[in-house]
Length: 362
Ligand code: PMV
Image 1 (cartoon, helix red, strand yellow):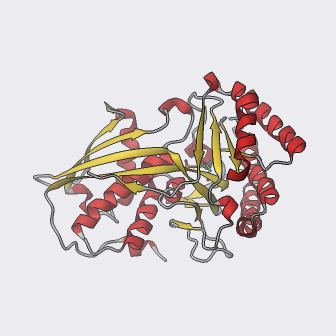
Image 2 (cartoon, protein in one colour):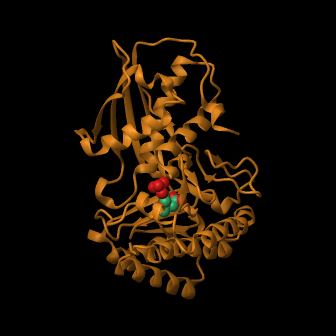
Image 3 (tube, rainbow, N blue to C red):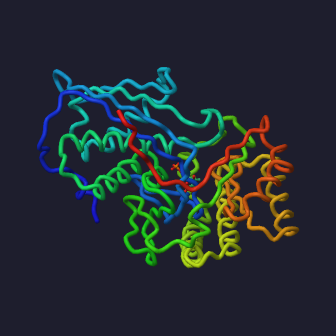
């Protein structure tokens, strides 16, 4: 597969104006993507659960410009308000995808987005936001070329979403999604996310992810800066090898339902991600004291009960707690009684594995 596959041939239809809308979920990586090459190609493969409750809903209105210029024309609303801060990111996204969506300069766009989770929750919204926008743009392309097949539509949406924010390419489809070439995963690609190519054990089909909001503030080092720091990182090559090896081990576990093995790999990945941050130059720590308190409580709980409660971390202080549905009653009790105390204002979000993005009715 090459990038040229995503350059469209001539459009068959013409359209003056319209409106499309998609709701796209966030995702949580089990094997983490950390480090990249231009243009948004991952230094190692990653795999994630697509979530369900944490989503971005985006409405995109488009109207033909009288004269299509050499620039992009768009207005941006987030949660009903103009967001000049977000505009450069969208501008850059449009520049990156223009070759693949040549209609972008022919229309004026009004982008109107909102999240189901609070903006200042420390939850990264770039995956859900960029995938929702990519899907909206694909819906416009479908109006211009209605013959496009659903599979090609989703693949190109994921390809475009990746150029907005790497992990966004894993938010188009549901369940387990792989991004990045891996020899044991047929069909895997650096260019886009694909669904896990093997049968998944029942236990992993309806996994829970309860997100403990430890720190809702803006983190002091962004993910793009963090990825950049992997370029000269002394442990980078070992880390990329480790991620490949962890994914190799996880693949059979996801098929056989090996919950204990899953915990080992997923927690190892979370701590390795943060170890990279702590050993970058400049070095930094995104975990907070309560992040560590939660991790220790999870380990104690597992020791005492033998239940399969696993933590993972994003590039931030919040903790994602992963567990199978069959153990959810006891685990929810533990979360409510012991862990909510470590959350900022007691806030947490109960999420679970979802089905992927959905088109909103107009
Ligand atoms: O897609 P980005 O640039 O926001 O990077 C995401 C990085 C992690 O969330 C830490 C890991 C991952 O694979 O999602």
